[in-house]
Image (cartoon, rainbow, N blue to C red; front, side, top):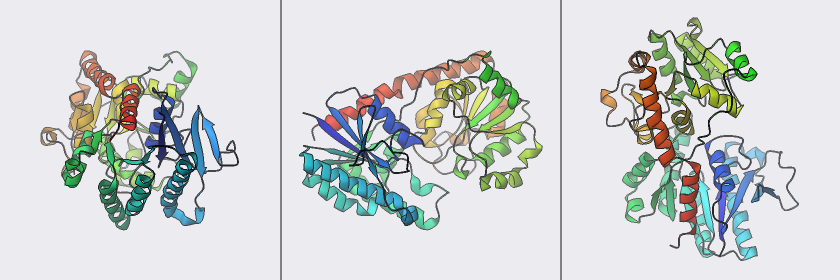
Length: 408
């Protein structure tokens, strides 16, 4: 028997954006079981010219279908996208007489509408799986009305999903604590996010390596590194302030899409980082091999994410950078465990149980500067052990295929 899985809620394949898209691409292209058949919804952005008259195309053997919600809907377009994708997937199930389909929805966007969706899915003999992502309602980028909607949407999804898959143990604990029916019904499952572990193929003498380091006046193992989305909730202001307060002679290299972002000017005004030659915004690095080399050769990585589940950037840091200085919140602690140094922000939400004893970042940097290479490598060995044990894509794909094919 074939097990058909419809994936709804990512922007589609190939992955061009963030976490969900990368997850979907790895899930479907690293398939381990021949009896699992994936169907992936793709949001029409004008690039899917290869789609046939039905809106379908194949990506590395995976069936993809294009959905084009009206652009005039504005922010509500993402809700329409998910609903239109679900309606189309249900029509496929009926038309092709697909048995026991699984509908895997990424995110809580359709929350208030999910009761009707669940009813339709159950009517065709299917199951509704939900990956709630992080705690979206806590993200500072959303205005209060949107946060209220997202919190209510989360509650609705928790009530009507047949299976809830959390990619972080902290998220799973939150869901079970906040919605007792989730724990009582035993529909809560933890499956981590995955990451690559292949080392960079570049060497110190390669032209692109020397060009990048020369362009930004940076030397291997003489910089602290930040890589990530340029949003306030990732605590850029705190990290920059604390770094500037430290006495380290090393640079702070920030790889992010800051160009044309109003937040960049806000940060400049608030911190005056432009007066500290150690702080270097270097833009983005789309060359994966080069970015891996830059990670591998950082003195240490700074991770300031405070909202969400398992952050892909933290997994990559643990894979490639020996020493990581990580904000001590529960979500980060459940991933990095004892393989890093932690730092704290006063009065922060979701602090881990050990956060009170953690130093502020400026003090953590001072401590890091005193570590020997062997001590940093010891942290790195433990980090790589955790990644190899818990976060390889091979393990994550196998776990997903197990729940997709499990009879309930």
